[in-house]
Image (tube, rainbow, N blue to C red; front, side, top):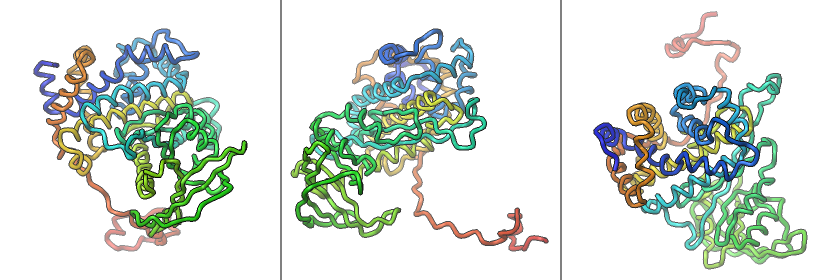
Length: 457
């Protein structure tokens, strides 16, 4: 185990930050990343700047340890040994498959850790691997490139499809596209290639296409996908029957026989939810399509689909708590790589919370611990810790057995004081009042409004 008074002090005073570094050394060892680069890169090559160094810089920015890539470079300039221009050139030419491979690599390394900690949640459908699919468009970047300086429209650096495993809360896969205007459905062919037998894919109606549903069924995978109004056709349907009440409405079930362009048919169940309250879009009826066996009742299918919102929580975290859209990275390849490293940071944060659940209990951690305060505390102490404990001090972590590493994480999790990261759920949003007072005035003094005075003419 790691020793020394300095290490012990950080383990006692900043255990979550120590966990972060230990997990990074375990999941993102420099040698493993450089080997991943050699196996995945198609055109890019290593001259002086290693891929692992570029990934480490972006990961520090994604964790909000540094505000920008340039700030991270300035702090490590001597050890990097190349110019900042060389760093930006490396990022601008980082092929999207490299970022995708790092996300998959991290999930494969951290998934066994969560299982050793017994911190995974029960599978939504017993005997099946659950995959939640959703898309994310990167926000417009700054106009730093010469080609963008006279462009009035917001320049979009790309988009992604993200796959989340709800049992572990790990992002298992990501599919990147440099064309910010491309239709998300254009990436579904790559998603299908990753589908395996006994998968259950959960997705919104944008992914409800004939090709995707037939493709999943052809790979012996299952799906729970909301029906799109105009992307499917069927030749026959059974009579609808009521199956009972579910949270928020009443459920009905019937059978549809879908048809594709080649005349093939696919038998699916359609679960219809008639909602007690309309959605944000004013909809009162939701149709879900699934090819799960009838041993999975319709009410359970509806509950499984509710898991889809788990990925929305991940997107919220990588956007507000982490730094997934580095708008100074205008080149699509660099921006997409930055987003992938934010997903890696999200996986590490999910593993830290898993360690906390294994020691303090899942209910207590989910109810009391704020992801925001946890991430802010870790980022705020990270730089100081790495000054006191440079990378060579952490090398023994990579040599530990799985049992030793898990025991170390549990020890650290036991030292975390949950009250330092209080969760404060907000109440329902109030409608914004119409701004009608002083409509013709350009400015108004707040002090006068507070004093209920009228502005001087």
